Image 1: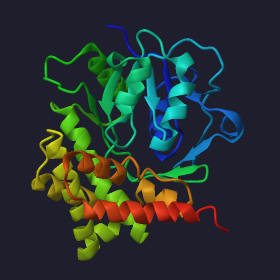
Image 2 (image 1 turned 90 degrees about the vertical axis):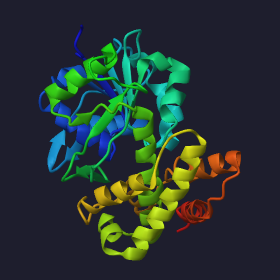
Image 3 (image 1 turned 120 degrees about the horizontal axis):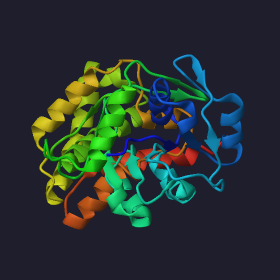
Length: 311
């Protein structure tokens, strides 16, 4: 079984830069390729990115540059940048490329698979991280965990793709998990984001507020409960106990840490609300389910976005 010898990544935000910095500690720098275009590519080449106070200058390739396909391709962009990112990674995808999408939400794997083949894509996401990106600098206390795998993973019967990524993560020190029911776990993260990201973005509060404020915690739980309702309609078995577990996890994160959506709001950037509450609302409409909390959160966040261009 051939090992992963080259890795390409698109998206050097908080998640992408933090994980790539960790990978580069034990993986050859000349086997790493960051995909970026325009001014961003020049900035990365000139100034690099800073992670926990250390500057990293990863090799940068523009989308049009010819290069051998990567053994592993990682998407770490925001959902609203995914369509463009899919176009830009073409020169890095070959017959045997394994693709991981660390995006939030429950649809990126399908979108990538439509273009490059779903057989190349493994489900994945990042959880339990407090990585925060401000300007060109990323800070984190906890890098978190990367659950990944096929839709179903039976121990002792993992696919070759899963075994290759597991070996790569072991070598590079990335903490991981291979859930038996990966799709359910993907929806668990989605449910957590629906509550935590949207509520903290609207209230402009860090993780600590979810633990210290009863009302903040209740609002996050109500948003999650609506996500559970639509998940069941989609035949994904989430339960109330899953909400309790998610709130417990959130309560253990760095209190001053901020969700990615709050970071976007504070930086006056477009958020991923369509991938969170927007997905809940569209699925609720499909199944005839009422989701008033998510409808309200989506309206507030979209209204906030419309103020970003107002001086």
